[in-house]
Length: 302
Image 1 (tube, helix red, strand yellow):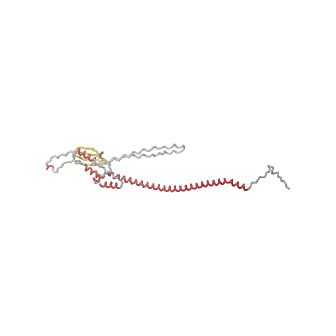
Image 2 (cartoon, rainbow, N blue to C red; image 1 turned 30 degrees about the vertical axis):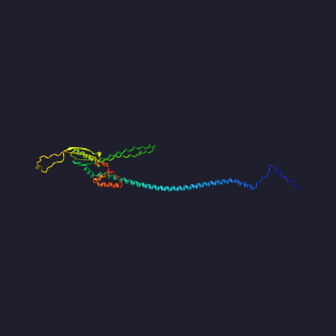
Image 3 (tube, helix red, strand yellow; image 1 turned 30 degrees about the horizontal axis):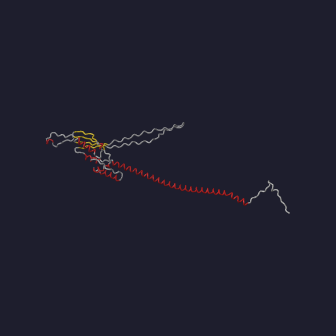
């Protein structure tokens, strides 16, 4: 016969066995839950890889730039050394050039007396005699007085108990002394002439000389005096002459002029014509070497 098995425990609410889930469903649900974690891990790994790649590229670029900068610095140091050497050579060249030009300037300011005397002898009119030619050098240029030293700057008052310190003057740069132009030498020509007109003509001829300054040529004195020459007869008694005739009076003159500031390089034709070949050859040699610049000869009325 059939038996009826009734379990009243299942109907009680406080006693109900927990239903167990199948293992296949649990494993399937756990894998789905871990997909976001895997995604986050992969994303973080990608970010880190990108950062590491950027850092590696930046490091390589910095290393390359550092090497290039070191090479440029070495090249710059080499160029600076060469530039300093070139500056030193240029300074020495400028110094030598200045010395050569100074020496050439000395030759250019020379006025040979042989040429000037021959020029005066050609310009001396008939009836005029030159007794003396004197060169008067200009007085030395006055030396500018040195500026007074600057006042000393007193030191700050010392603190109590400390030894006083002396005042320390502050040196100031002194201005350069003013440059005084060198004056040209003057020439005085004295002698005798037959008339005042001859003296005037001689002064005008001296003004036209290229060796003298025409604007600074003047007549200092012209005085009528007895002729210093004396008439003598070998046998005065035989000639029957009792009294010797007196000669006409003469004009004693003194002319002052100044040496022309024109350089010898501008007077080459005059030097050649007055046979001052030594100075002319020196000037032409300096011009050929480039120490002196060729000058246009001065055109002056004769």
